[in-house]
Length: 372
Image 1 (cartoon, rainbow, N blue to C red):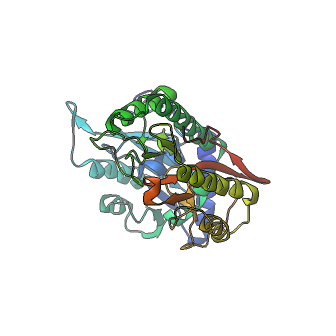
Image 2: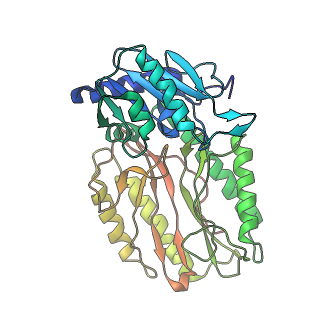
Image 3: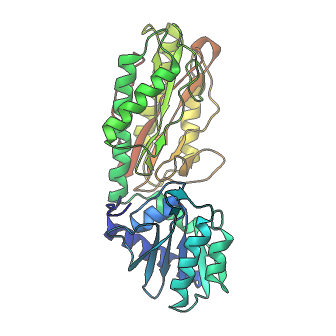
């Protein structure tokens, strides 16, 4: 990690820190500490995988800290970079959270203990809260989740790169798929295509690779003639996810019923593109698509319509009647209408990614929709 380049624009990271501190000022917060890989990256520009326990701290008075495993990065959106010992003779330590928290405690001791600290309630370990104490704690996650809905340009660039990898994966799938080819072979070929597109290892492999099924991981079985293959692909590039789906006819000869379902599902996407705009209630968008798909000649639908994507594969806004979200400019959404029925073997799902702009939806995944 020594000498590692930031994954995000450092000035943008600093602006996010300022927005977050400002948003939590009403709660009397004078420090923020984050420990999840997503939020460390979001606010400092750097990310480590699950083996390590980096953390970042930001004081309302100005100083900030990134605690790195073993070796410092060359630059980050903080005023100070320190390290903790993550490995001994290349063997990973078990007590990494404790070691990183000890560095945080030492840093805070030199600056005066904060009185009120915002942390991620779902992820912050007691080692970190003890390092901040005695203090009152506030949950930082609602503010972070809300900020993450609207993508900054540096984030959008990474999302677009992940979506581009989806296009490469579908091109490889169309060139590889035929009756008798195994699901694991398809999975491996598509992962190779994504890595080639991104030029580095992925931080997420995607969603569904089971043929003739609504979803699931690849199995040790061949694809069969007559089946539809729902390839729901969500590679992550440097922590930022795409989420797209195409449905392919394994033998290249879709039935009349399958083609009719395809026409209805692609019509649902066209409907979303016509009416999607900032200020639209996601429930209303869901209801419009539900009514459209209810008139399908074959198949039925009872799933969600989609969700936001970014540092998680499912973020707000939720295109789902169980939430009352509203589309906002700057969000990236995955929209996935579908129809399922036994006669479709087993169904049809097509998913596109869109950027919510001031005037409507910008299609980010403009690769072919066809069944062959």
